[in-house]
Image 1 (cartoon, rainbow, N blue to C red):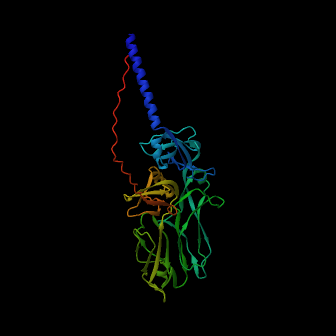
Image 2 (spheres, one colour):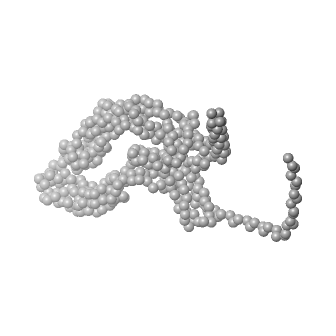
Length: 443
């Protein structure tokens, strides 16, 4: 029995010594090191669809403080670790309305990356978040008309339209504390000295009971078309020209403005046909997939029983201004810069190798963009030694754009130095030596 115990103890002791030796060798060859990353962008996840993040004044906000992170990992991984390999997350899952102190977590963006976060490794370790219910309220449209037509013209009953349909109410959405203050959506139409029907798209402004604007809410639709008939009392009628536009601009673009020259045409005719005309249309203008301003000269469609007055044109010039759709949210994200295509006898470096860029898009688009590392590869094919400037232009998904001018990086290319020739060894014979036997003492 004692023999078996002795064998077991020896085996345990041998295993312990082997493990200690392995640990010592591994730590000596690949010791632990710390890595610090500053000003990392905070990502907020887990927010319920019926909640919204607000600041101390109840205004919606997507602005959060940048975070400094200190990580502990081995030397091998430390040499490869970059800011794009980690992300700092504030998880709002399960949180309801109110004020919350949310801890910040550090997560790897690569599955083969391992690290630990020491105590006080995240600065700040928490973030204060205020959540409010996201509510929608229906309010009436308040149209204010200023000015009056000239003598011999009169104003008719206004019409409010959205997408061609009559409308009298709009929806207002946002933080509950802001939405409940909205009593109406106001717009102002100026018809002073107009001689033709007023027809214009107008922006709606949410207002409270004191007629003061309410910020932090969204009105849908954000603008409406206001039509106010201006009718003459004689056999001449000055009619606004309304071009017929078909098709839609390319994805991500919208029609910002339409200019008609001349904007008004005087028609003559009997009172019946003239009374039935509120606007003068043109032949159709197709703007399908347009990405820039469209200018066309198009004929007018003259109604039966009327004709242009003497000296009036039969065609007009229509300018349709097209612009990119403005994005409501922005995010600052890191972008790594790598090099490719360099000749075999050259070497290159890039400064800086990580740049921060501001991207604009919807919340979902920016969240998806931040979930994967952004990398831009610069092609150095056919470039020789020298210093070059490159604009960083990452490939972005549809609907996401860069805010401002792309940052530039400096790439320095140099020739690889030619090795210095090694001198030939001396070919002179080396005298041989005969080993001398050393007597071994007997035990």
